[in-house]
Length: 276
Ligand SMILES: [Zn+2]
Image (cartoon, rainbow, N blue to C red; front, side, top):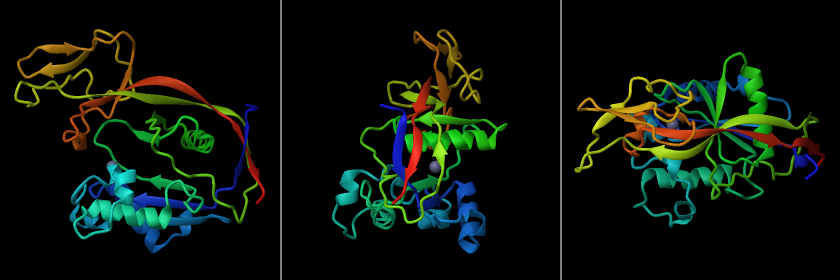
């Protein structure tokens, strides 16, 4: 690898709000940009604001039938378009029609999906791949652009998910070159559930020393949960980890008290935009 990747210029970008209908920042911003898109217009780029789950937005609910943000599986996207499908599965198919098909040359180059969290994570970017050099360069750029505000990067490496961010044929190449760079990320290593009793009921809360300490080091022996009977559950691992999504309200149904991550530095190749 020579450290420079040649990519076609990105020319179609979508900004999604309301993937979860109870997360108001993206809903407000996309609503604003649907009425007047001047703020997100860029020369040579088609930028499209889009309300991802309008029925959930209308009902101020996270979703109607099932979590849209988990609905883009190959099985869902290829299942027969019948009336009986859950609303979000039908919606995932529509979104895949408009902005994909996923993995095809026709797919949009970039989709920004705007979310909120009830955890104390601050501004966070979520990466789906550790070797998508386009996205790594973009994340590096955003982190520097928002400084001194910190913006952590959560790496949720998922080999089955591939977003076609760079394969489209560009009509208006942007003459920008990016030097190789490094990005500090927090790689998801484990999803930790609450302690439960023999009936499956939650029997502890996140320990006060851990609550709101997203992205901070959790060392072996540090308190992790406080049992309802008063005992403390310590972290028993053998190395320092960085919990995040701590006590996220939407994740009770996903049996998840927090996500355990490890800190890592990724190297992004330099990027040279090819003419096309
Ligand atoms: Zn969300």
